[in-house]
Image 1 (cartoon, rainbow, N blue to C red):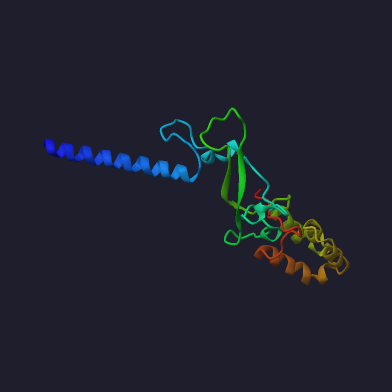
Image 2: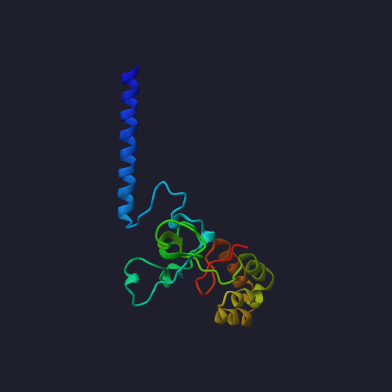
Amino acid sequence: MQSTMQYWSVVISALSLAISVLVSYSLEQENQEIDPWSPLIQCNLLPDEFIICDSLHKPINSSEADEGIGCAPEDFGYQKYSEVKTTTVYCHVLDESIDCAGNRTFKKSGIPCLKYTGYCFISTLLYSVFLGCLGVDRFCLGQTGVGVAKFLTLGGLGVWWFTDIILLLTGDLTPADKSNWCEY
């Protein structure tokens, strides 16, 4: 009985030592000195409400451009979830009154390259259905030249009007500035 208790005592001590070595090794990799027994959460694990991240736009003529920080202009405009590209950005803790352990400026990865500029899918679809012969849907999407042509031809005598409705529904007609549709 006593030998079993000694055995489990040794096993638990070894596991505790292994865990502390792993934690200290991972912290050394991040160049941070964090006490694993501290009640403070690591700054890079704070919820989004407590951090602010830098712009998604890729810096120009910077060493960060080589590190994969930010989104290039061609990374925006994808509507399907499987096509949306992700990036890494620098984030900062919002306020000094928020206590957290570790570096208050850190990299956060997996941020989607999304840009919202106020284009709403439902309103554009309604414009296309009811005022599409006059090109109002193309004007709303920022495609002024196409909107004027559609207006002058009365929606291509209905063919262009119908085609634009189909293109909107299939996701092939998007805003001119390659922004994403607003969620609401």
